[in-house]
Every structure is written in C-alpha cells, then in structure tokens.
Length: 451
Image (tube, rainbow, N blue to C red; front, side, top):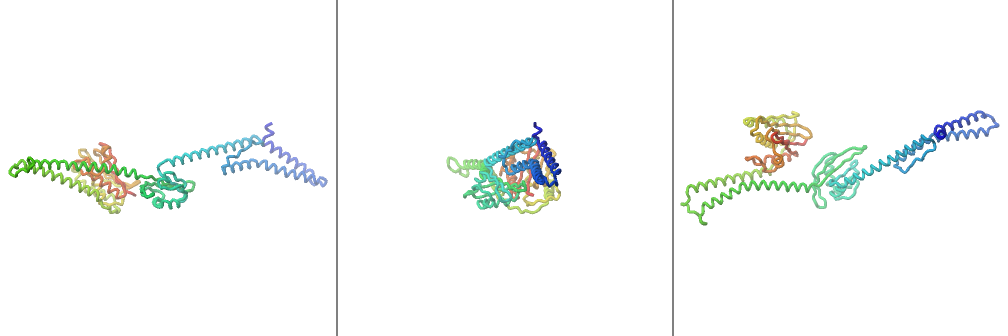
C-alpha cells in the first residue's frame, strides 16, 4: 500500500498517462474526422505536462518556503505532513526540526544577550561601544552615571553633552589609555580611560572603558601623606629630643635655686660638659639642616631636557666612572646593550643621577657578599628598559612596599631620598621604575621608557 503513495510511483504513473496520451494522439493525428479529439487530447497532454512539472517542483517550492522563513525569522511556519510519500514526509520533518533548532538557538542567543546586558549594566566601570565612529551600540548604566547622560545613540550627541570627554577619548585614537579630568555638574572627576578597537563583520568597533578613580587617588594621597608625616616626625623627633634634653641639662648647670650661678663658681668640669652639650646641639642642628636641604632637593627637580641618547655610551660612562671605586670592595661592574645602537629620548644628566643611585644601593646590598656583581643592561621590548641588577642581600617584602617613600631608608648613613628622587625623575620622563627582589638572591631595578 505504501508503494502506491510514494513519490516515485506517482511520477511513473503520470509519465505512463502522458505516454498513453501521446500514443493515442499519434495514432489519430492527421485524421480530419477526429480533429476535435486531437484538440482535446492535446489540451489534456499540456495539462498533464504542467501538472507533472508542478508536482516535481514541489520540493523546490517547499525549500524556498523554508529558506524565506529563515531569512525573515518567521518561526510560526509549519510544514504539514506530506501526502506525496515518505521521502517528502522525511523532508518536512527535517524542515520542522531545523526551524525548531534555529528558534531554540535564537531564544538562547536572546537570553545570552539579556544576561550580558544585565552583567554590563551591573559593573561599576563605564562602557561605551561605538560602531564605525558614529553609532553607539552599547552604553551601560555606569557610563550614563559617570557622564551624567541619558540614553543616546550617536557619537555626535555624546560630543554635544560631554565635549571634553569625547575630545580626550578621540585623542587616544584606536588604542590607548590615560587619566583625564572632566567636570560633571561642577564636580571634577578623574577618569582612567582605556580604548580598544576591533573589526567584526566588516564593521569597526571602538570600545571605551572608564572608571572614576578620584576616591582611590585621594586614598593613596592620604596614605602617602601618613607615611611621609610618620617619617618626618621620626626624623624631627630624633633631632629635637636630644637638643631639648641637652638644653635643659645646660640650663640646670647654669642656675641654682632658680638663680644664675656666679661665674667664679663654674669649674672646668662644668665648662667641659657645657662645651660637649653645645657641640652635640650643633651636630643635631646640622643634621636637621641637611634633612631640610634633602627635602628641598626632592621638591625641586627641574624639568628634564629630553634628547636622543645612545644608551650604550651612557652605560659605558657609568662603568668607567665607578668601576675603579667598586673594584676596591671586590665588586665587578659591567654593562651590555641590545641592540647595540639602542637610542632613548631622555635627559642624560638626570638619568645618570638615577643610575648612580641604583648602583650605590647595589653597592650597599653587596656589602660582605663574595664575588659581588652589578650588571647594567638595556634592551627594547614593549618599552625601552634599563636594568640595574645585583646579586646582593635582596630586599624584604615589607621594605619593598616602603622603599620609594621619601626619607625611608634601611641604611644608617642614608638620607632616604635617592629612590624617591629617582622615581620622580622617571615620572618626569613619562616612564616608571620598578623593583624585583628576593632575599639573599639579589635585586633588579628596572627603568621603563616609552618607545
């Protein structure tokens, strides 16, 4: 019974009827008596052929219907069970399964999009995504709050509402990051801005993320002030306490019962004690003057005179300058530069001061170390880098957190401004200084310069 419902059987049956019609038509063709019969058979033949073509094209029509439904996201369409045979029923079932799968995928995609939008809107970082430098395709709640704007869809409108922000961001180009300050309703906000670009589906997208770090900056400033005040207090108290104590002692030597002692009652021992006390007061006063002078130096670093400098020559000069002195204490000083013609834009006098500070620190770290070595090294990667490495005692984890704080020092004879001054000089160059150290294994100071 199933064979009579198959597509092939129905095609063959139609072909048989067409052939029978053609055979009969050929037998009576040209017989004038049967002229009307010929016309009738010809019309039937045409109808049969049209029906045959329509029947065979059924698959194409169903396929076109299926593809158009996908194109226009019409998932309400359904393919009825075919009466043209098992193969068509299988085809319709496959169509229905594909439509259901696409619908499920679309629902899942929408759910993922909703989840992503909820997640993006809940983060405290502002996010703006711009398509082809014109259309804003993503603007989260944090961005609206930080810039005090509503829902907008074009970069032109954003420029009208926050011209300073747009100007600063466009100044970064397709990639970059910087700190910017903008005013929002009279309040100054310090934003850390990061711009990244990508191309997807032949469209360019520029993603801008930013966050207000004013609170973090203020907190860091407070912490820095607390550290500085603690160290200043420590240094001042170390100098003032003995001065105050000795002054009180000298005053007690020169009076008795609230009255000044007569000159003839002063003996040699008392005068000697007074001279010793005065010398100590002078020494501590000189120490305070030196301390104040160091503070003045720290706050008056001049603007660097930037020029292209061949780094190998700079390092070789330091080796020639300090090698003889270091060799007396058994320390080997060497330098290498890759590439050999590496050139960096810097102020040679200020960077020489930084390198001398680094080498001096390494010298103290190598005290008592056999086969002490200080290696100056320069190379280029993501940035131009100059390293000062030693195999000395290293720096403890606690001290690593403090070494760049002004006046902090672990050396008795140290002023505590060398590293602070070095970091300030590097910041004036638009660079940075970092340190890596392991106790009893050595220390590496790295100076980072922009490419």
